Amino acid sequence: MTRLLLSLLSLTLIYALTLGSFDPWDLLVGAVVSAAVLLQYRRFLFGGWPRPLTGLGGRLVAFVPFAWATVRDITVGTWYVTLVVLHLRPLVRPGIVAVPMEERTPDGVVVTGLAVTLSPGSVLLDLDWERRLMLFHLIDASDPEAVRAAYHDFYYRLQRKVFP
Image (cartoon, rainbow, N blue to C red; front, side, top):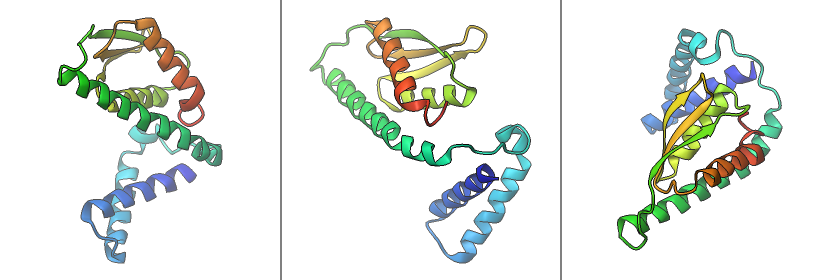
């Protein structure tokens, strides 16, 4: 039930932010539209009715360092790409790196792909579910083992506590 209410509140908030209005009538319309979307697409979003959301408090606490590390990666990636674009740093070896999914859930794989893709200089290209690999294109793929180790460390230190 918590997952459903959290989804309903999130969609209603997005609706209100899109309108730029927090008028009670707009919030009511947003809640009705959000409820209709959740009801219509519940199989796609939740695989049927939503499962209970366990450990929400711990996940919220663990989200802060996860979000901070993601923002830091975005900042570092932006700086690196800026230096390459301005020819202040050479473009060493762009390429594709295969990163194992390891024990990530499907949601965890999506969050990893999103967190990595938010940082300039890296983008998720493909998910190979049969071989359980994520393929990333990186502006600097000169050391694929270091990239795999960094993504492994990020997942086990920060992401797994929030999005397994």
